[in-house]
Image 1 (spheres, one colour):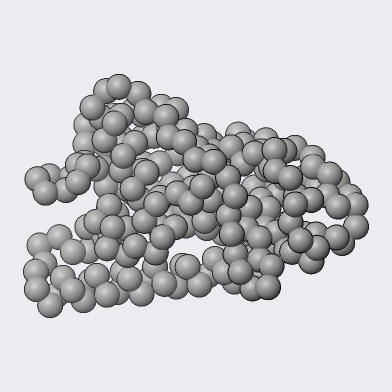
Image 2 (cartoon, helix red, strand yellow):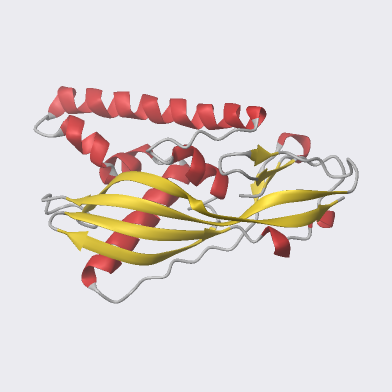
Length: 217
């Protein structure tokens, strides 16, 4: 993620791609991950719930007001996670929770962050997808940002968030270049489900994290 905040506004710069193999399972899993990430970044609570295994655990068998209460509770939890990420930006530490929320937001996955689904392994009613995220900071023209612009860059070790300001002096910054993430999914029997898969959790693999140094001005 590159998030710049000049005069209180935020933007994200990057390039996104999703690599999918040709099998039906890989296509469905890849589509599920793509939709989940996009919805998470966009604040689309209904789609996140639709694709979340945790939400389906709670709402299974419920209808009407009872189901609506579960959705409202889930939406409230999402709001807390979004607010928690904004607070984490101030502390410089992203919590690597099983829901992957902070990591996904920080890497910009689903909001311009470049990633590839490299491998999908299916076993019974479960699947495991290996995702490679590449941040591409080496290709960013940081000098194009106005002076006093604060940018948020993923640093090292994994989970650290740097927040340098344009014009605060030349130095070297160690930033994250690539990292692999495992997404676990579960099959759903809902015939109306858009992909047939639910997202259970995300796990960053710390030993796959690779860093680079960039020149900061």
